[in-house]
Structure formats: structure tokens, C-alpha cells
Image (tube, rainbow, N blue to C red; front, side, top):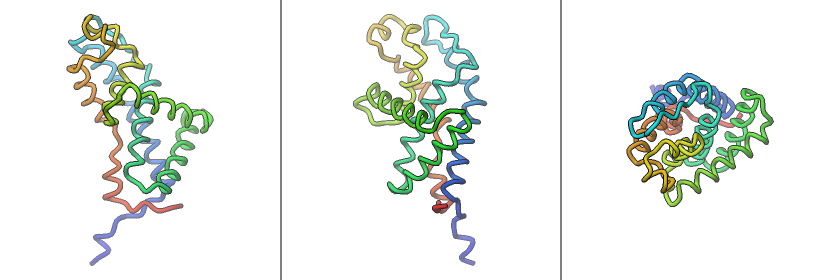
Length: 181
């Protein structure tokens, strides 16, 4: 009777593999829609013309934000092991050196913290990261362009889009008991 209430076991390696594959697939399948929504946003004076194939910067922002959120859901030793495994999985999938990927993500995270200061909301940092990485400021009205800040109406729309790319670490913790390999 009590076995029904127990969580399924999930190894750290399985979780890393699931995360890496999920994020890569989600960005691959979803970025065309993101580009279309951004390109057609009524807050811009002219169309940004994001290419549906130009998802690299978006992917790095999504990975950086999700990796930052991972640390909020696991104890420090476990999150370090999972993080390392994720970097190795992503590096293989992206054909890059794991250390280069790790350094790139760390730089993105640091930069996202700076552009989002004083807020500590990771989703907002991700939205602002997309805004600045795709140089969307140049398409705004003079008021926001001169302030070099996203129009809050556009940013709110972008926050809603970004929410669809945030990995649900809470669900993993509720459904699974993550164990060391």
C-alpha cells in the first residue's frame, strides 16, 4: 500500500540528460514562434526581423537562467554534481568543450545579473537578456531607446514567453527522488 506513495527514483545522470534534451528540443521547436512574436510586437516602431534560425543567443540565455534556478532546488553538493553532468550533456549535444560552455554560461549569468540589477528575479533577467542580446532597443520609440531600457509592455509580453522555457525543477522534486549515480 505505501509503495504507491513513494517517489520514483531518478538518477542525477538521468535528470541531467532529461534537462539537456528538454531544453534543446524546446528551444529548437519554440524559437521560430518566439521570433515571430517579437517581430510582430506592436510596441516596436519597425520590425526587428529576428531570423527563425538565429536561436543561439536565446538558447544560451535559457540555459543560463535555468541553470541558475537549479541551485534553488537542490542542496549544494547535489546541485554541483547535477550541474556538471548537465554541462557535459549539453557540450556533447552542442559540439563544444564542456569548460568553454561552462565559462560562457557563467559570463551570461553574470551579465544577466548586471542588466537586471537590482531585481533578483531570474525570469526578468532572462527577458532582459533576450532583449539586449538581440539588440531590440533600436526598434523602440525614442523614449525607451534613449533610456536603453525595454518598454515595460513589451517586457511583460517577453516575460510570458520566457516562462514557457523555464524548466519545472519543483515538479521534478515532487515526482522524483533524485539519487546519486
